[in-house]
Image (tube, rainbow, N blue to C red; front, side):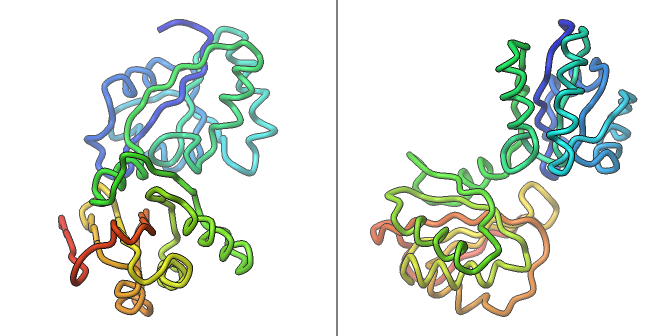
Length: 240
């Protein structure tokens, strides 16, 4: 490995077999791993017998820690940045470090791999010749409604992350803002033991799952174009 570089390293979103050989090499050879949650990443490193030192880098300290990481790179150190799961910078810490390194003229190398939104796009059965990613919806009601109204105005499939505690409310807003016939795919626990993909139309899914207690991690895909709406009752694909 070259000295003095920031590495953006994708890690599995569930199934540990999804880590790449390149990611393992970088994590083993790095001088330090900047981790969103060191306790979480410690389990991953232990599984692969990696003993690289870690330091914390998350949304609450990234502005303060970013300069320290770049100083390490300037001094010839190899810094590997990981999030809890998936690709750093995709609704996870990472963007700030990449931008700052590029502005400082420091080398950045991305080791691609698992990403929940890409998994969902492939598994959704929705049109993905073009699509948008919206991240997490706002929590406050006014901003949340604008989030779904903007989705309704898209001419493409939109994917977003959602908390298990707000899936029912999100389905209600999809049906209200995008129309009951909007095609929807709910992707839960991607690559994990209880992986589940539920496909249908917004109105039926909102009625069916309004009061369901959900667990796990979710990506929801929506296509508001009537021509893309699913026919018939929702169908489930359960890979338990």
